[in-house]
Image (cartoon, rainbow, N blue to C red):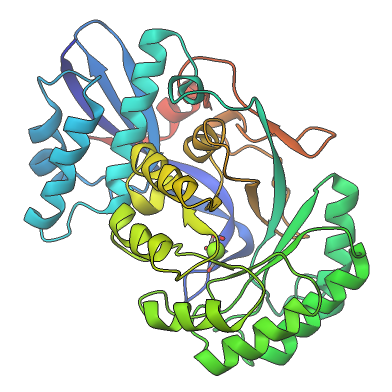
Length: 384
Ligand code: XYH
Ligand code: MG
């Protein structure tokens, strides 16, 4: 087997979510948005696909780094190809991002699964064929009846439980919301949700990412009194000593890092260094499925859970193959957004939730994405 083609198709679709000036997602008016599909094809006719951001998979990155490493190589040599690409991250002056690396690596996994007629989660070493989901809310906003008050969060939490979710994570208010961040309002929202769902539902808080140590400590004390299950990203994750201090001073488990650079090297320091109580990885944060498996296995060696950041087929495959993660992060959710509605480029979403609140692993070969290729062809704006 030899890789013959690496192709990126950029296309448009209608999105009903927008990102605010700090990059947080919120409901928005329907508008054209761009998406990219990378396709890797070998000389035996096998191919693999993965989605990514058009800017991270732009021609400069594909031509100068990805094709140089992949073309002519065996697509099954994922570790060799991943390391070759990861080394280019330094050589490219960070032009080749972790997210671009992840999209390429996911497409290689999809190709392998398609060639072997096996779901990727089984190739990784199947552990379970379903995983419970938690509802992960969007960040707070100032939309009436949206997520603008503690009472809004309480009402939405009731809806999420009735929808079938077995746990809920709040993202609370962050700038550019005019009065955010606010420890007091974060605690009020968490209290309203606890009141709404009762004492037995696991609840988590993912707060403003730039609190000080004392603010994070005050907020952590507030939610541990409400018996919250984990406390996520309340401070800048580049300050390892701040997280070690917080984990030492609070009872509630501290989870992270989510976005800190450095892949499994950074997460090894957090896991081995007592910086977190629950580790975190996500395929788009650490360069793909392979690095995520390394992080999960290292955490397992320390009897630590590794909770997976974000949804999607790559994260779902990892969850199907590890024993030390309890939840699929389904979201981001909002009262004004129908998460179950697939975007035009998918015939169906990979993370449909059943009546038990579980996400079932795909039983089809590869990553299991149900791609609408006819739509993508009709909406293509460029290929490279
Ligand atoms: O909107 O800042 C945010 C959140 O951080 C979100 O982007 C992310 O999906 C997350 O934190 N999930 O846990
Ligand atoms: Mg988070």
